[in-house]
Length: 221
Image (cartoon, helix red, strand yellow):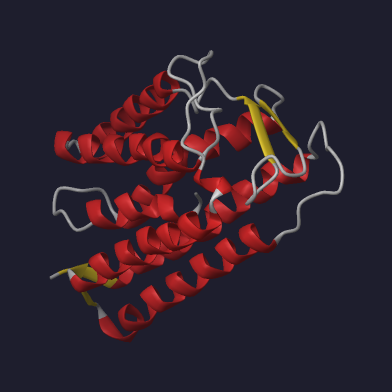
C-alpha cells in the first residue's frame, strides 16, 4: 500500500491527545522512509523484477531493519521517544508509536511473503498486490475513508481550511496514480538506481507537507 497507510494517521489525529496530522503522516510512513533511506545507503536492498506481483515489480528481498516486525517495533519505540521529548505527553507518544506500527500490519495485507518477524525467514504476507480487484478499492477506502473521518471531526479555520483537505485528497490521488500507472520494467533491474529511493522520499515529503498545511488550517470540532 501507499496512501492507504495514512488511514491510521487520519483517525489518530482526531484525538485531542494526539500529535498533529503532519507528524502522524511521518509516523504512518516511517517504516518506508527508513527503507528508502537505507536503500540509498546500500544497507537494505531491492530489485525490480517484471511480474514480481501484478501491481508492482518490487522484489523486496533484504529489509530486516524496518520491514521485520521487530524492526518496525524499534522504529515505533524510537518515534515515541522523540514525541515524548518534544510534547512531554505519554499519550501522544503512544499514539504516534501505534501509527508507526500500523504500517507493518497494513503491509502484511498486500505484500507477498517478504515481511518477517525477526529479519529472517519465514516470510509473511497475504499478497493482495496480486489481486488488484481487491487491493485498489481497499486502498482507496482506507485513504479517503480516513480523510473523510478526519474532516467530519474537524472544522475549518478560515477559507484555507475548507480547501486544504481537497488539496490533500488531490495530492494523494495523484501520487497513488503515479504509483499504480508507472509501467513495470521490461527486464530485471538490479541494483535499482538511486532515483528509486529518492523519488519515494520525495513522495512522502509532498504528502507530509500537505498534511501539515491541513493541520494548520483545521481544528478539532
